[in-house]
Image (tube, rainbow, N blue to C red; front, side, top):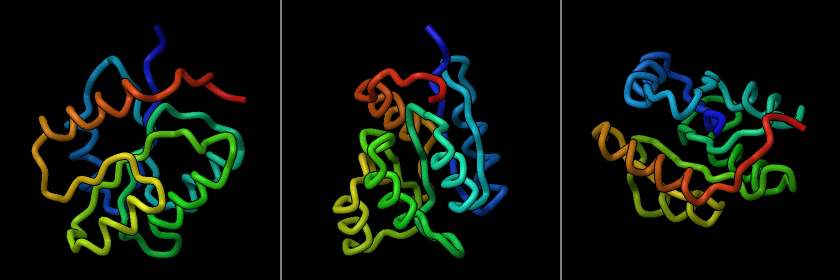
Length: 132
């Protein structure tokens, strides 16, 4: 079985490093982007992933708008999306869930929590081809 592809989007390089460390596992490969615009370019070009992990609060195109674009694109509509963010207000959580987030993690979180959520999301994800 091929490694599962995970798209990770966060505008803070330190957060990406933490996520890389937490998600260091041969069962999956990470592709990290520092902007939602760059991530959307990949998705719009047809890149396929098994899971996306998005930061909610980013300059420009934020994680919530990227999530909405993912859900609106038939090629990616079923992609499990984990929101990981410092935003913990109930309205922010509800907005992300209403937009189609599979899971919502509030920073800071433990590595074990992230791993459990990633494994659960991947278990529910359809097996996607590497690209279209």
